[in-house]
Image (cartoon, rainbow, N blue to C red; front, side, top):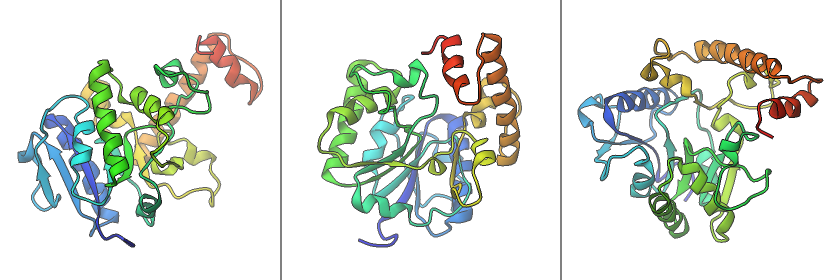
Length: 267
């Protein structure tokens, strides 16, 4: 199967707030991909604007990680799953071609030196970090569907609160799933990377920022403009380094990373 035949994007959102964010994300994708089929799994179908989504689906068992149950219910042969706190910045181009060769594709998570992102019941090298599950490309192959089922089942069995811990364990153990690590522009978690990249380094495609959730946590007004988000993340980046330096970090541009991790108790 070539081209975009059998391809589509899905969101899973429960509650009014997250459904509203999923609508915002879907609208941003429509700007760049007007003909791509879009589906929403939600318990609030009344909040979906007419004409935005091609199909609405119920969430069988609403819970904070309902996406683990719903991804396998996709009707598409090749699916792009997006968390609600995402904005699409440009065309997807040939992204779906990855799912012709691989069962699963995600980008590395950030903060890879933190204990949180190194968590897992299965010991793995530092160079095998958690993948971020906010942007997931997968094909409806027997291997991928079986893996999604194991992911959902292990999450329930272990009583985990973060799905990425379980995901890392499973990817390390599984010798059958073919997975690909996407470059960071398809799950852009650190917008100040845009300041560091040279013109031919990347095509920024999908922004994924918790800053889009801050208004739900009482941390300021709702942010929707990527340029405003960039300014906010620049400010927060400066604060992170000031905090590390106050804790005793120092050194040159390279050595300060290890120094900061020691100072913050994360080494």
